[in-house]
Image (tube, rainbow, N blue to C red; front, side, top):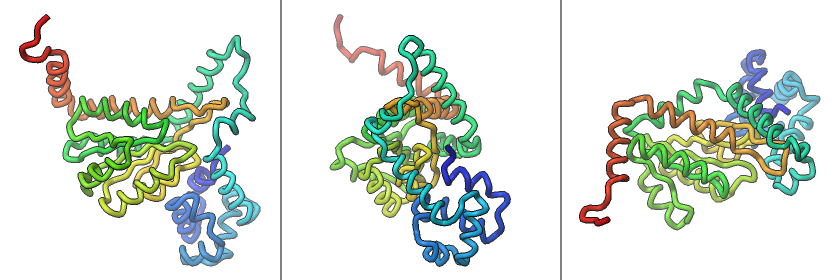
Amino acid sequence: MATVRDIVRRDGTKLTASERKIASAILADYPFAGLQTIQELAAQTGVSAPSITRFVSKVGFGGYQEFQRQLIGELREGQRSPLDLMASEHSGQDESFLGDYAKRIAEQVAEMASSVPQDQFNSILRLLADPSRSVFLLGGRISDSIATFLSVHLRQIRPNIYHLAGNQERWPDDILRMRKRDVFILFDFRRYQPDLERLAATVASRRNPTIILITDKWMSPIARHSDLVVALPIESGTAWDTVACAIAFVEALIVKVSEVNWPETRKRIEAWDSLRLSPPSGSQE
């Protein structure tokens, strides 16, 4: 099912100038801007309440209340746990489960490929490949494993890669290291972690690097503090959301970052391997 965000983006070409202002405000602080009263949204955008009513009608809703009900439903979806998902599981027959599951995941990866704009991928690629920018990474309870995966590969390709520690008491050290031109990548999928949103808010206000959020279609609250947001498919039809699209996206970044300046990447990997494979000086069999 398409989210309000998808619908607004899809129908953007048929909007009037006033309606585009409304759409921009909703997308800039999604989904929270759309949860205001119609009077508050009108005041924020400088358009009339009737214009907002026409806008929600044009994008396919019966009224502002229906529009808000869908946004509230998306927020609830973003908080669903494996226990909730198990109630609607349709994992298939045991004897064919592996093949069926692989097909389902392949469909999700194909959806990711068509829904993530190439221009957005290229923008992130340029940021990560720029050696003058330090790159900081962190994820949630499950997704931090993806942040680790990306950071380990980036460290072999280029210097100044920092994976923040799980211990919050150690975060200030990395935050103080961040500069405005640096990049902070956060992974946060449902159920979203409040501590990561607080961290993103602090970093955005105090250090102001480029913040990249990798999330799902229901959008981590971190999105309101982010410069670039990548929304990936995660539904597998089971009690467990899939990270296959996140891994595929990250692997694609690793490949292309390494190719931007392959001669330098090659020299770094060769130097890395010579140190990793060489025994310590004075060691004995």
